[in-house]
Image (cartoon, rainbow, N blue to C red; front, side, top):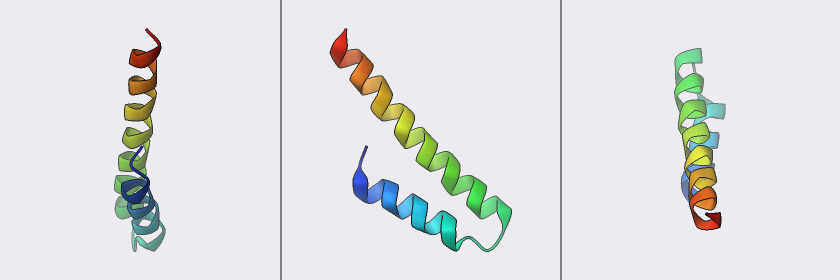
Length: 45
């Protein structure tokens, strides 16, 4: 996970003025986590 990108998504989600903003940045943060898990899985195999 890119810590800077994850922090940006989290902060922007917290600052979101409506639920669409919050949902968008939450999805981006979740995608970042999935990417890391996929990379770890590939490395183990």
